[in-house]
Length: 383
Ligand SMILES: *Cc1c(COP(=O)(O)O)cnc(C)c1O
Image (cartoon, rainbow, N blue to C red; front, side):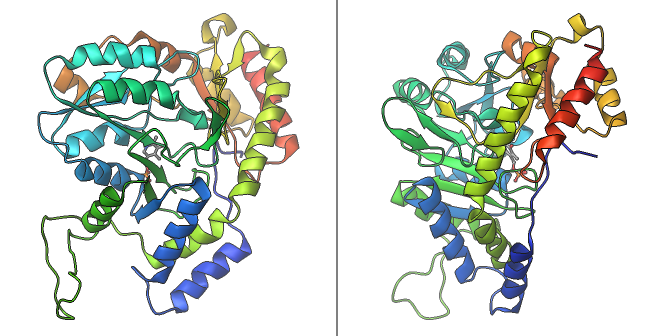
């Protein structure tokens, strides 16, 4: 069975974890600092703050910005639940932005429409998602968020290794040139894996300090204080990432260039293998500025034209040993959000959802696996 995503754990990763288990600290030791420094260096940010998972990273970002009850956060509807939920953790309201139906991304146009729905409420943050790994229009979204008095926070778990060129300069997702913070996840299907794990990057010293404090109970140890002394200016959480997992993260991060190159090569192979299936099957649209290390190989399928339901296609693929997944059920369709905000009309999100299907993509896939998937898809769609 080819799953839609899978971690790549090698012998040296296992050795790195074993060494961490034999060391003095199982949590909050020197490997946390080492992983953070390596991650900051890799994406080109001043600070990287490790935390328990990508959801904790988003929650910490909301707390560090002091987002308060009754204020508003804009999140795209096509994303994982956590992008929206983090606003609710701090009592803020979510205004769901629509997405471009071809790329699944929040755009300046969909953000403009969402801004109209904020009304008189205080907008604090805009949370674009680099869906699949393709970079959103950060300069465009940042200008609009700034003009609306809000901060941009990138939810970037799909885009570790993605670079982009908005002008002449090559930028890296996570370098936070246009945003206050970017959040990452090291869930097994993400580009590097630690099981559970997350990161927030920022170039702002004060935000970094606040994130560090909030991830460990809100505790600080004032300089020069008694050796046992700690203080809590505000309550935080236990959102720490343990040394054991940071050792795995450090080992995995060294492989990012190889993993990203493999993802790019497989994406090219898919583009070639699936080209004959157009227009029934199209690969999600890539923005001109984006050079993605794709997390997801999402295709848009015209199920009506194929005369097959998505369920039939998913089951037929499965019968041929090919896993697939839907990214995502629009979050505004979840019962919780429908009860809160009623039925929203977000036609781009609905159009994306009607056609999207993510096919297997992970570094350990062989070139021949792409052919297997393409053949399975041809069979499943009878094209
Ligand atoms: C994976 C993911 C998260 C959550 O990360 P966890 O580590 O699973 O908590 C949040 N947002 C997006 C877009 C993700 O893909």
